[in-house]
Length: 347
Image 1 (cartoon, rainbow, N blue to C red):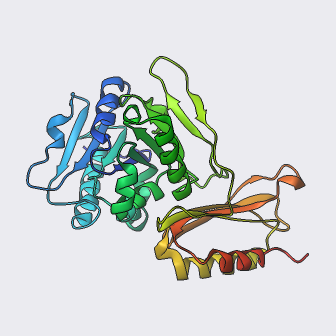
Image 2 (image 1 turned 90 degrees about the vertical axis):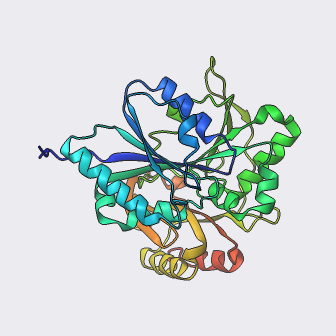
Image 3 (image 1 turned 60 degrees about the vertical axis):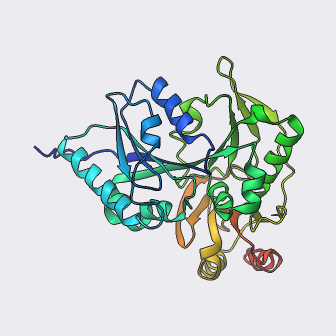
């Protein structure tokens, strides 16, 4: 019998990271320490047999939905949509009861098409809430991966939270190099270190990264998770940069900053920016001060999918600073920054 009671939005976490970064280890830790809710995991690997499902310690509260026809972000994107539709029907009918969904991508997956699925499909958009993109980074090998594989750049660029693994295999100097390079690719994401795969679920689940909130995180630091101790910071964030060039990486973070903006001018600027460069803009978020409006204007987007909403009110005049962070393939920053500054209100 189908329930007539509307279901709450299903929170979904996208778990990504290059081959061997420790995604399965992280999920196993979650399953061993997650007794208060039911989780469904969609996982995917190349080939006719899904090897990773044999490595997961599955209990009665976990259902593995295996998709073995290829990478869910490309050749079988349609299969992901179909799987999400079927899960919704079973959940609505009461045939399956679960509280959250985790999608574990193959290590060779670009997250972009998966993320877009949650915005372009009507049923998915109305029933599922994308909570965040979590990227695991193999600290021992990531610099080599970034130099050789563009998808590793994309995985870091899309991340809301980054979890460093295998840090016990490198020294402090090597770790600093890794963190600096990650920050310059994506200085919006908070970085955590998981010791032997152990990290509290509160650090990567229910983070509400895709809500149109008025928090704009920029380089809040690097955190180490110790199994028996509280969360502590052990890395000083890099100085904030207007343009963060990162080695030869073709993905980096850009910061646009100004005072109070004219609503019509900034609207025109954003429309032109998204139209011309949206395909290169992985993630972007802005908290903008609009002349004559006491509320913050929030803008958030993925490629050419963008949303606007008004947030909380500014408390005083000194706070009214407009900031827009864009994680993108190379942009003509100087030219765009001049255009951005021209959106400042004349009155």
